[in-house]
Length: 413
Image (cartoon, rainbow, N blue to C red; front, side, top):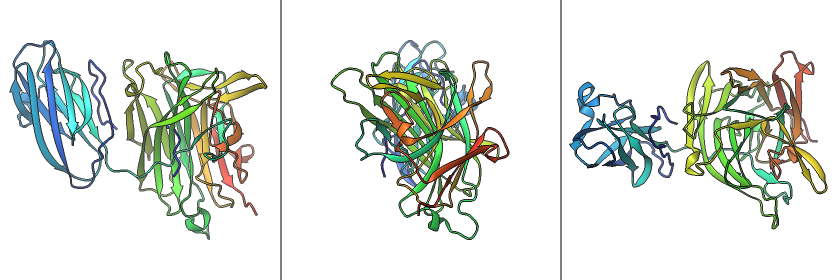
């Protein structure tokens, strides 16, 4: 499956950024070997050290929960243990009883570094071990000089406003009437294919020249009726001098299978961490009013100068042979290959972004765009290929409510 170049329960605010990596995936009844290495940086006292798996570590863990104590030391500390975990995501919290200064700690799981940072009694360090997960269904980013070999069919709405920044975006997505009455999902979606809809949002860097970012949160429905939440973070290079050599790389991705019916609405949210010094991005999903964590990634692992903001609105760029627009905030529909038949519908409700006065605001004006023009910046387009068998209906044009749009399939015969 093509992938373009795109959780923590609680990640403590620490004096240095926590490091979350995903090299080792935990599975059912997997054995985890946990190693803690910690060094006194500015404390100078004999201290307790504590560890908690899949639960919060109290501030005063040595008195409030003595069973979490894994040792005492002065100057440095090393600890190893092996545990068996159940299926699902897991996280590990390490703490030290340092009131006067900080210790610098590293958490390893099965030989992989999953957490690193300065920690004290008020700021514990968290490492995350995600469960085995399916391959995300992610749209490709296609350069405008592409030969068509890595393009996906795509159709979208975009936030048609002046360019601005935001810290959070969200949209509610579902697959109503998919499949329609009298049909099966296998008749609508071919084998090894899917229909997906979600957010594609733009990011930038304050130092790295000609470098930008793409963030994706989407919901997909496959041939077997499986609904899946897909998350991704991409970096792409946009040269403005010769030689012209654009490139794009998938930095991080994750997928979560949701045990819901295709018609169940799911609100997809991408947001920056609330700590202004953090460069963590959170992918969340909400079902029946309950918000769940889908994934979490520390973008500072790639670049410490990434701008803590998403870009929305419509930009403009001049090129030698003319000019064109690019669309920073898109909510679109895509699939692995074209589905040339009716019977599928993707609904978007209440596309929103977060304002500087800490309120959610609806996208007031949205316009439909096809994949060959769905630029998220000067060089790169989401999808890259039009979806000729897709169409849209919206308020006063097939729908009775505002702030929503439905994309649906049409027969290609």
